[in-house]
Image (tube, rainbow, N blue to C red; front, side):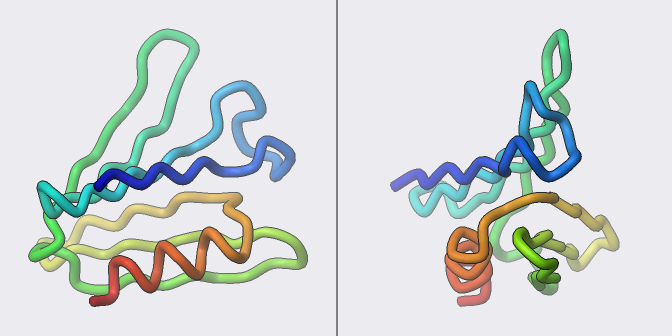
Length: 93
């Protein structure tokens, strides 16, 4: 099953195109999508390559940091606390 989490538009990030994290249990991958005016940047990581997942909480929103075994770090900004907790729990299995 696929789960898509979108960042809030009011966090000071990209108001028109918020960050997205897509967690796909069927293919065992997480995809980080940063949209732009034309197109988007996308990074896909297999669950087996994830070294650590953490969240840092601000006053209203949380940032998710995903580090791979190969040294790649993804920081997705502006998720609600409940979404951030769900993402961390899903990826820290």
